[in-house]
Length: 166
Image (cartoon, rainbow, N blue to C red; front, side, top):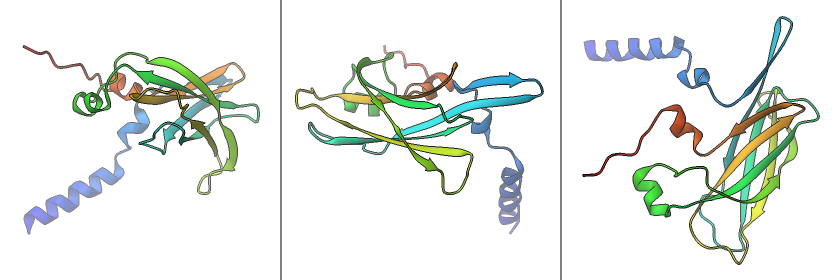
């Protein structure tokens, strides 16, 4: 019985603690105008996880702190690593090789939050493409402000290093 009470108490404590993810310093852009602070941020993701040549890859993004002049794009990059190695090592080597750029189109405001704009685009994998591991570096440009969501940024935020091998 005491174990259940402690578990419930821990759950209640977790509810009042601000999420740690919100405090991670991500590559967003902050602008200060007098006493107000405006932050441009983006959260991008690829909904198609496995694809073959000729198929389309869906790319989506959410932005906050943007104006009507914001432009959201995605750089398609190829990493010099096999898909199996990426699962085993859970790390991407370097920045990747730039292949193409996709400009995302605005879909309007988010259903649950009117301060978030939704964006969508698609990339068709060329027939001449080689196999491998691909990613999308999604970014928003709004005047002179710039924010990015990169597939490798989480590794740099939590400082994962490659294990040493004997």
